[in-house]
Image (cartoon, rainbow, N blue to C red; front, side):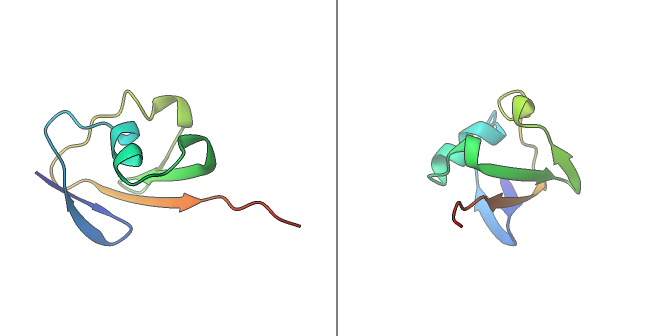
Length: 66
């Protein structure tokens, strides 16, 4: 199935969670914020949120600095 992450279509397997996708993208879940289908997704829901065909995600990585 396909989902859209940051404007790019990606193929993911059935049962893929937001956490799984972050791992596939090489992103640390503790350093990102995720919007799932237009709604902010709490970090503690990343593992429980299973992606469906056509879902849209916006993923922003937090960068430290000063």
